[in-house]
Image 1 (cartoon, rainbow, N blue to C red):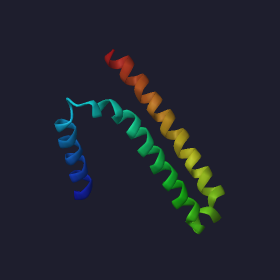
Image 2 (cartoon, rainbow, N blue to C red):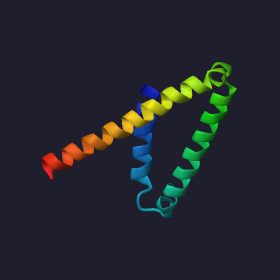
Image 3 (cartoon, rainbow, N blue to C red):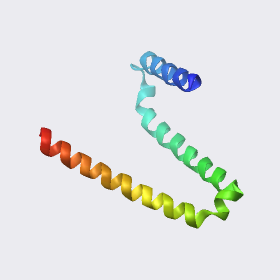
Length: 86
């Protein structure tokens, strides 16, 4: 956890130091590329795990149920907050 917090703090400091330079206009593109690479390597890691590949059908169904449940729960929560406060 400490390395993650240090990375975030270092990023905040770096952002503060380069906020008035031309580098800032490239951060969105750079972020997209880095996140895409992270997803790619996550896929490589999952594809390399024999247990995950062997049980993909049951894991996929569980993941689908969790995704639908999380999405519906979020939508109901947003609707409730919108009705209650706005």
